[in-house]
Amino acid sequence: MWVYAVLLIGLVLLVGPFLWMVASSVKTSAELHHVPPTWIPQTFTLDNYTTIFTKLNFPQYFVNSVIVATIVVASNLLFCSMIGYALAKLRFRGKSAVFLIVLATIMVPQTVYLVPLFVLMSNLGFVNSYAGLILPFAAQAFGVFLMRQFIQGIPDELLEAARMDGAGEFTVFRRVVLPLLGAPLATLGILTFLGSWNNFLWPLIIATSDSMYTLPVAVATFSIGQNAIDYGMLMAGSVVLIAPVLLVFLLLQRFVQQGIATTGLKG
Image (cartoon, rainbow, N blue to C red; front, side, top):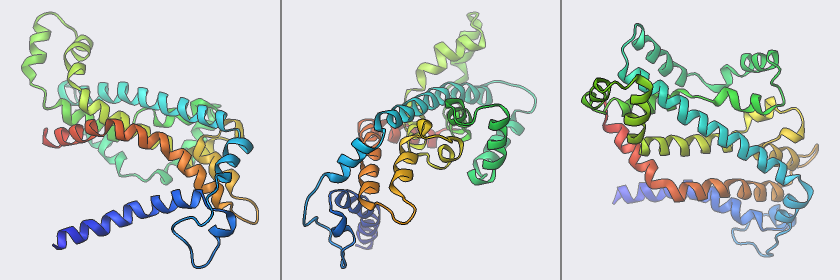
């Protein structure tokens, strides 16, 4: 019985804030500040959503988020799978050390390297550009680890047979390994999309004009004034922001489950 009680508490803690956000997005400003607060809106209104789509340059921010998330996902799928293949199946001096360095970078908090990363992007002239938004996340250590763990489970005999037929390493990777990576690639793609779409801190730092803002930065920036916070607009913006992510996850969640479960059983 206590298991169900713990699960119920966990469910309330996870779902409660989301339901509160959705309910608050359709409340009036007066009701949002009413004490005691109400769960069910007494006066239903869509004014907060109207404000989001009329007062903000929503299409520009949406396009920025889509461009950044799409390129980040594509580059991670390409680079992480290639690096993972090299670390799992190729023999070269220092391979173990390289893998340990990759693992170590997972443990470094993002805030530690924000300043040197900004200085690097500034020296390259990438501040307030798509390159500055994308390059720092083009390949990530977790993706390399995920791909390496799965590729280790692919039998060496398959690769040796291809090599004996005259295939080079890139051909082996493209024609033998890559077709077997459906589930982990889908998992990596979804997780990377979630992280890139919701990323707030780095776009806030590297984008110096509102024309380069992504959706999280735009919603937060224009909801918070000098003396007050527009909670209704903030909640409506958060609902709009999370909708594409929720849709993608619901459509592809079985690949995430399959990929994580399979990766956990390998090497």
